[in-house]
Amino acid sequence: MTLYRDQALKALIPHINDRDIVVAVYQSCFDWLQLNPRDLNYVAVGAMGQASSHGLGLALANPDRRVIVLDGDGSLLMNLGSLVTIANSGVTNLYHFLSANRVYEVNGAHPLPGADQVDFEGFARSAGYARAQSFYELDRFTDDLPGILSAPGPQFVCMEVTAGEAFPRDYAYIHSAKARQTFRDALSRG
Amino acid sequence: MVASPQLAQDAPVVDHPSGAKIVEQIKAADVREIVALPDIVTSDGLLWPISRDPDFRLTRICKEDEGVSICGAMSYNGTRAVLMMQQTGLMDSLNAIRAIGIDYELPIVMMVGLQGKEPHVHPDQSASYGVRIIRPVLDAMQISHSLIEEPEDTDHVSGAISAAYAASRPHIFLIGRAPEAQ
Image: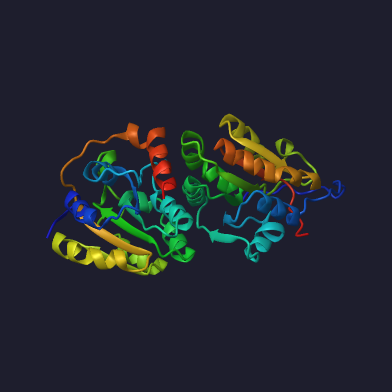
């Protein structure tokens, strides 16, 4: 009954189409860049906690694309109000996946405040997301992904994960002008 | 919220800018997206009229730094937005502005109400600490800014928005007197 993050991300890959925007942060981002490098990966969120808000901006400005946010639990705790903002915005093309490992993984693996109690699925549900659910093992997660990604958003998926394979943390790339220009060019190609 | 100095009874009466003209200028700059947290300086003259204007889509946010990210992300496909807040929210958003506006060179355009500023006094001379530090802080961060106080100050809004998008850099309008709705 363990969901490893790299396995969850690998399960997601076949469901990402060419036009989808993927916003990823911290270890999920580093993992995703290795597992599924693509020009429409949006990696420049700048400040911790802001992935969901970048995702909302992209969803509002690109209503004909799905925006898939690969958020972190420590990050989301910094921006819980964004759940309400997203739910209230009216976007239906945002899919919010949360890697909940209950620690600040890239900052020394210190525990989150309330690590054993925080109910992220409950936060999203009460904020007004179209649907919020949690997953603890790979098979059910894999089976449910097509339905989640074909349903109107905003959808919230809490992946209760443990770290899987460790991928290198390429901070220089995610903050680079090249990463931003690659994304901008891909977006303008249609 | 910041402490508001008591105005002297003999404080000069000054003209206020027109909210309608600011809205006109925003539209002239091809902005249709407004992202906002309410601010008492701009509430009646700007945000309420914008909220009723079908030409705009208003996204109400819970915290100001959300708006920096939303507007930055929108800009990647050329979508123009104006982010509205009070100067306390500006101070709370400085790290997001630093990262997304300056480090990432994205055009974050903000209208910031200077709550607590005396209408007849320049912001740098305000008795309110929270007001008089704003311009020096922005200068230290090398962020472009301009004042909207006098009625004629509204004339530069459209050009400043377009310049921010052309240069892909932030610009912050500091609104020192509450705009009148008309």
